[in-house]
Length: 112
Length: 114
Image 1 (cartoon, rainbow over the protein chains, first blue to last red):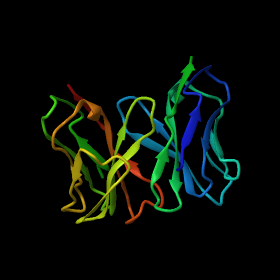
Image 2: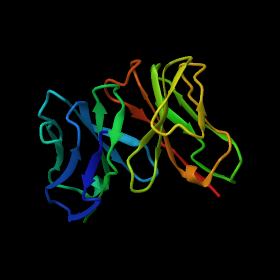
Image 3: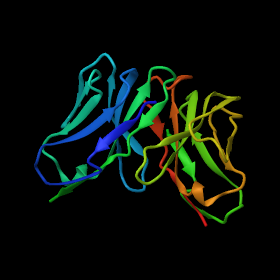
Image 4: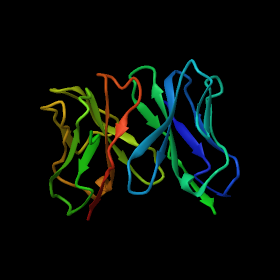
């Protein structure tokens, strides 16, 4: 059974720092891996989607990598800003039925 | 486009009461789904639909019913609410019959069952 883990559960860093969020999964048979952002009281916003054949995707200050063989993905945030404070969720989409299996998220706080 | 909308935003129920969480999308998406999010856990799929008239169970369907009479609407019904159903509920949609790519999420409904 696919399981997705995100460590740490919470992270607090000063503004301006570069940081890495981690996501690991147990079964490499995935269709894609997705990173989402969740703001309090709001829905989920898709940040990056990496197809299983890809190694990384970039959007602005965000870069996500995927290593299927080791069951790992990282989300790199460059030059962090207070507006980046949110919970970041990782989800893998199963190859078999396209359902999403979610991690519990990393709550990120960027201190001004 | 309004995207995916959910009502109500907040709801408090007593054990045993019934209610319907509403979800609508105006993007003509085929695939719609309901998730619940509990503290310290990832989102879990409750029910999904690959088109009007077609629904199926997800990972945690017990205690919930759904129907899909139109492409736009996908309501989630709690027939007899239990405290274990206290959670945040998200509705999502995707353009194709299967969620091959990006899913679009509603703002969520925070439900408390006393």
